[in-house]
Length: 252
Image (cartoon, rainbow, N blue to C red; front, side, top):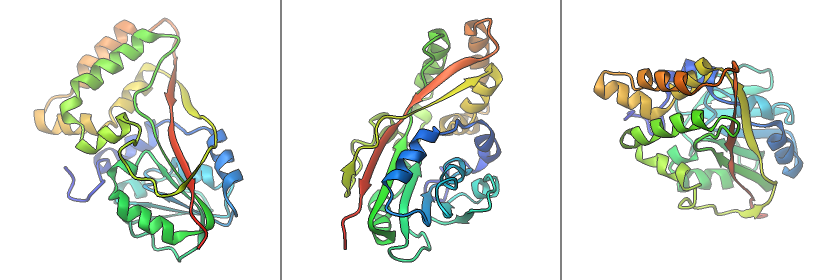
């Protein structure tokens, strides 16, 4: 376990930037439409900046923060995005300054109550907060590929940090002290080669922990199983349904 709370990805930051899937443009369009203004968005737990850069299409300034210095160093640059190493509960932003706060695949690593207190302070009246996550992928056209990934996940159950359970139960146990709003359903998808899928699996925090403890790589057997399950096509369509909760801060 990292000494810094929530930092499970410093050792795989370059791979995270390369192999993590992209969130759909429809999600950011819906969030921009819900936000009361478009001057400033805060992307908390920004990682390598996928959501931060997508937000920059809609907002004049995006403030990205992450506890991992390695993630921030590998974050995708953009002229309207500034990245900072900071915990979730200490944004460095002025009170009432942000129209939108996003947390993409990171809330489960936070001190959630402390973060929500900071989010409430930072959001302008009527401001919007969006928190989303994704668990296991599906491969609708080639289920045998998905079965290999499901088997790897089952093998890794003892290696996931305990906070990962919140992703599996769709954040149901985490407080959300905001007035909920509906922005519709959204999902990620990618057409990936076998090597790209293996690169993504290598960014799992459970894989990192297993490698460090066992001094062996569980992806070796997984790669062989994927080779046997892979169709004749060079790529496979992969889908990740998003668990999204969106809310508005009360007027102060």
